[in-house]
Amino acid sequence: MKWVWALALLVGTASAHEMTPAYPKLVPSFIEGVQQTKLEVFNRRADVEYYEIGVFDANWAPVPFVTSYRLVHVEYLKRVQIDVYVNSRDARRAAYVCSKSKLRTESPRGTVITSKICSKFLK
Image 1 (tube, rainbow, N blue to C red):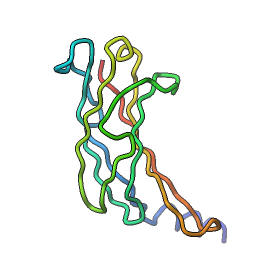
Image 2 (image 1 turned 90 degrees about the horizontal axis):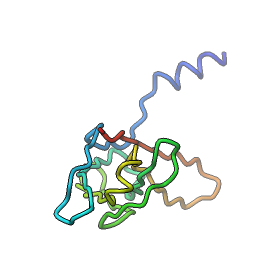
Image 3 (image 1 turned 180 degrees about the horizontal axis):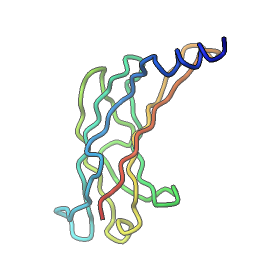
Image 4 (image 1 turned 60 degrees about the horizontal axis):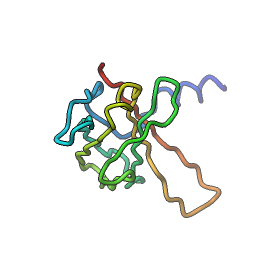
């Protein structure tokens, strides 16, 4: 009987958010010594309105970066474009850019499912 539940979990659909492009490229920005990339986040989750942006190296250590807002408001079924800026010396070690859903829950006992999507920088 346990296999029926496992099969139901595999067959059931899970909605998450999307972040494109899958392989962004850091390019020189209008500011000397700063690289930039453009991302787009699409929200497929009715229960989530905010996504946190992060940049990481190959060992998943945080890399300093700048965006207009690290916590981005994305309404359900809407898209938001985000500019990410990284210092040129830090851009050499930047490997991933990620978006993670940030949940607000009314009940501390409720089930909470977060989604995290990462894209690998093209070098």
